[in-house]
Image (cartoon, rainbow, N blue to C red; front, side, top):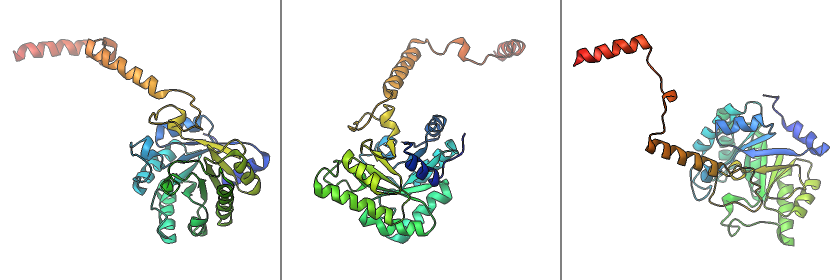
Length: 284
């Protein structure tokens, strides 16, 4: 376990143009894998609604679920910068609720920052959380929690008016005091402009290479989640395929009697086995 990076380290990486590696994680084992791989940041994303719980989207995810998973990730990655994702309706209602729910992430799960979706419309929420002493990552572009307003899971910033709106949102997030921002499904040209415009680190998920770092959903890049794969995902392995093959082989071994073999059992001490056999005989 190396030294955990702080927000100042990410600002330095931006200045030096050193790309930031960023991945989601929802559990202890995956968090340990990410840390051992040298990951810079981990997001405990509300995408766990689909990737872990099988929901149709992120809307049903609760604060309690997010806290439990964030606690597990922190235990598995004590040396990695961890961000807790604010679920739907944990910050939209009021500045006060936004601060209280953000505080839960810091107090109960020991995260380093929280993330919330939106630009201009959530600027007051970001400011309130920051004023309470907590670090915030903004999130603009395709924002899943408000996908119905966007007409579904569609890329943003592809027209002039939409691109201008993304720039305005990005500036609003920075001016509200956020320490970082995530851009989702935005054209590279717009991402590049925003990255140069902002002084805070800019991360991309499906927003091209012209930024300060990249995020992928771990279930997508490992080939675990099979319902659909976004265009921007690069799959590095096929865990679902390998796991299914292994489970199929196990089922066949159990049914055929090939498992378990003698080496898979705990044998009695020989002299104790003799006593056991005598005891059985007496019992008859």
